[in-house]
Image (cartoon, rainbow, N blue to C red):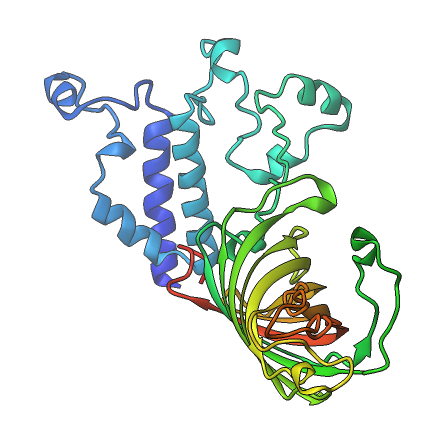
Amino acid sequence: MRDYGLSVFFLAALVPCCTLNANCSTTPSALADSEDTDQAIPLSWLNSDALALMVNLLPDGAAEAHRSVNEASEVATQRGCPQDGNAGPAAGPAVTSGCSARPEDPKNAATPAAGNLTKASENSPIERVVLTNPKPADRNQEIYYRNKTELAFDLGTFPINIPFPFDFMEGDPYTEHPLKYNLVPAVLSLRWQMTNLGGPWIFRGNWDLTSSGSFTWIPSGPETRFISYDMGLRRNFVPRNRNYATYWDIRLGVGQINAKGPKGVPYAQGEDWPEFTMNLGTGVRYNFSPRFSFTAGLNYMHISNMDLSEHKPNATDPSWGPINYGINVFGPQLGINMRLGRPLRGSE
């Protein structure tokens, strides 16, 4: 209590010293030159350590209030605003304009007077900036891009026998033969994506070039196996920012089969080599990541020797040779794809 009274005494004695003095900015040299020895000592002359000591002697509430006043005074000084007791008429509107509310205080900036709300908005120096969300990047660009290579393995079963779809081009009727086949192909492929994504609307996508080696097991039919090399194209139809894409593909190849037609088996294949093959497929691809994906679809498979076994009769072989009946089947096929090499920069 004695410390508090002592500090109040010092403040009471020193504050009027500045307020009653006509010039509070008097410098020490000016005071030394002054003949008026009774001139009051300005508050600014006090040692900063002494002021800090007196402030610390104040109770907590009074000390905090004193610091708040000092902070407000410093802000006003930086803005050129007159402080209490020193405004005077000389300050004029040029000095005091805009000093009633500080922009540094977010409360003052956010709550203008109700009557001046429209005017303040119109005269505000801050222009409204409308931020628009940019078009999101398509993550499929990390999966389908030029020069990407993939290793693919497909396994299917084709138990459904149908007529040759292109019989109309050969002038033949659409007929099925009594001998039924079931083919189970296992296909190992190397896929090279030739282009980046492109194209309008639902046709947006890219092209694959496929090179495949195939072993086909024949569980139903007189032959038991077919081995071939195939090449083809695949078109991927890729929507934006989706994990799935549809596709269709075509592959043409040549291979060897253990034909039973030359041995007299009705409707069997006419010769071992060459046997030509064509595959047409469509399906859906699901991407687990930029590296791995899964495919599921339907595939049509054709095998024939293009009538090469039906030779004309000659002196050594008076017959026309085995008839080329061919094989035409389709069914479901599943596959898995794995990216080879490094990923596209920034995709993983």
